[in-house]
Image 1: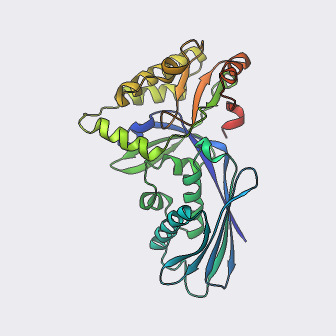
Image 2: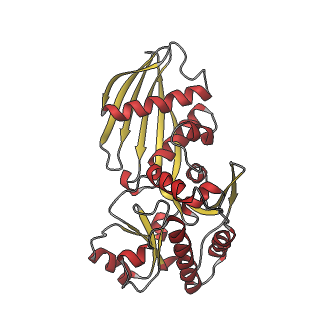
Image 3: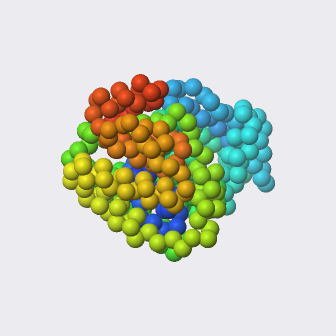
Length: 302
């Protein structure tokens, strides 16, 4: 049996602007997704997806023929999407599904799917590792996006990520500020669809001349910041910048105006996790407002 593993991700800076070449700080998480492969000789693919709680939430059987065919599936819409992904995988590695070969493929997610840590990107990277193909190309053929999540899936430390002439560049960095105990992540109790968010961003910025000098400066200063007050000032600057870009109010202004610490949206604004500064009492503030999933930085980031 072969096994593969990919880390989840959190995008700390740049958000949607990473799509257009802004410099982004991204961090791999302690939560990820594992993937196991067993061979058989039945010309079938038996697929099973297991949740972080150990439940089988999806399973399907595909017949390997001239094309992949769904034999059985629950639920069926996921199987249709999965066939598209597997066909893209075969496009990059034409010998993967040869005659007289079959596989038992099992994915195990370590975090709730609605956390937004990259259930799709970790799967894509695992599949690419198995098939020995370029994960960035597989992403391009399937879900699309900037690729920062693929880069995080492959690394054990923080990264600076940037698209240069459409090509991903990755620089390994160490992000371990002295004030880590003052940082934590809070889940919004809702999931943001990344593809919808990207489409909206593209529409809003279609006629803008984008210059990310200021945003890139903030990213580099965040990376090298040594005190919490400066860090809070930087993430507030970042919030104002992205707020203007996508024409949405900053999260603190919209929902938590009485909060004493700083708050920063992450990734696709509107859902998933946000970053906050504070202490144990600060965490209790969010829980009292119904945001029960609060994860200290040291428990989330690799």
